[in-house]
Image 1 (cartoon, rainbow, N blue to C red):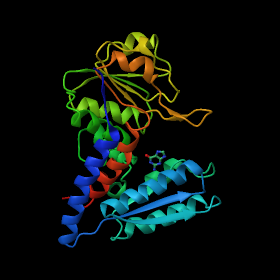
Image 2 (cartoon, protein in one colour):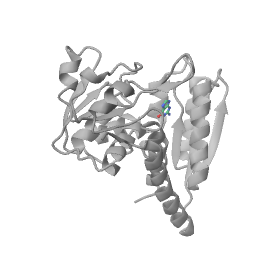
Image 3 (cartoon, rainbow, N blue to C red):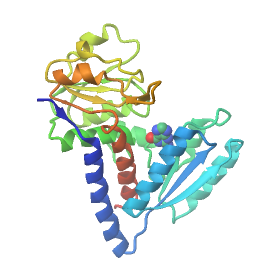
Length: 279
Ligand code: GUN
């Protein structure tokens, strides 16, 4: 029987743990505040930002919303970030991506002080992850680790294959699996004979960004398959990078889309916000 990993239930479990922790912190007089900045009004970003604000409200974290016009200059955004960096009442800062084309994303992300970088995108946090030092970890890959651990799936000693090498998912995902003592391979668009590589995987993490690309012939019998992709087809139905119907019968466990990795990203963002006040 294939286990369907319920990301909604696991993310709810994490949010409830955090909610209890935040209530305890409040009793000690500690408040947590997250500043959420959106530039322009990309509809998908507006949905993500709304979900983040709702999660803050649920857990008891205060959120400050900055909705800036599309024409905002890079310098204006950087000035705001520098002000928030210095503001002791602000614990976390999140700039929703993508930014409009005239703004240099790297310059903006580098401006956020690493301690407040709850997205885990600052080079200092990425470097800390790389050398095994404490720091904020990118939320989606951190969420995948929680899905595996809370589903009782052992990582140590397993063949882990990550398809995708993005800075936000593929690279930090590989480092986290390595930190958990997995044997890690990173595959990508230039990998020769992808199926031969992915068929080695006990744990296959798919973040390729192509709808239903991973079919049964890429997967070993009994593998655990984690689908990080999310796409909407012409009829408005959501699907992942994995062809769920063909792959699921072959797996020991698999995440669905929606309801798998997706809900974990916000839970881990909330985790990072709480982490800012932990000593
Ligand atoms: N845009 C898409 N995903 C993310 C994310 O995890 N963080 C931010 N800041 N922007 C995003």
